[in-house]
Length: 267
Image (cartoon, rainbow, N blue to C red; front, side, top):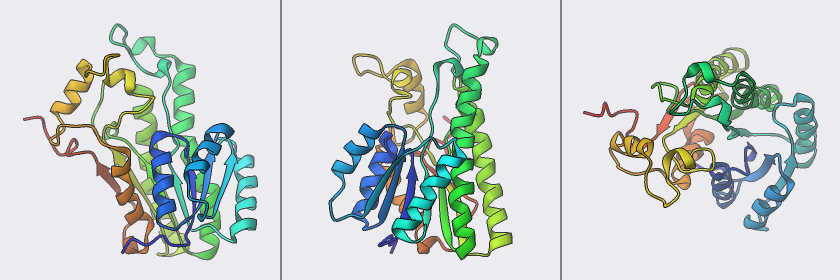
């Protein structure tokens, strides 16, 4: 039903935990995958996990460099002929944009805040402009972005990441409207909002060195009706849906995948 067979899919942030899981899932769906990342060795390691029968391409690129993205787009079109789908899985955080327990907002590192804003917002906007242009020229395509639980509820500490994802979510809705009004109903822009998944950027916030939950981790589990963190592969089905023709009348939405976190008041 959610077929992605032979779809040409560009995936940013492919070497992260969530992006890597998605890349393997897309390969199983018989898509043609273009994986983008900043580290050649990590890209090579991911390529080694993908079936040799899958048509792939990999590029080291900075998603905040529009010229580099344009170069990649040219190479992708030369190899595959067109681009069907863009998935913006890039994102991240920095210590200076996080307010520690013994700090206040006035201890915020402005340079780190700026970098986090650039990575999470500009790092989604620029690929959308570059690869979305190709979709506009053929009147068909899909873009899926990664939002966050930090958008609709104020989560302590992660001020930079929260602000960036809120802006990115607004851009998702804006871009959905822009593409539909000016380029037709064949181009859709949506986002997912993952709940809490253990990764490099949040592991120290959620888990102690012995693997037990931190106080913050305990609070999150208490507010998650399913009483656990998510698994990376649990995002993939929803993304397959949003990318597929089965979602042909779905645009401008943000789909929570959070074990009920966003629905639960805590009472």
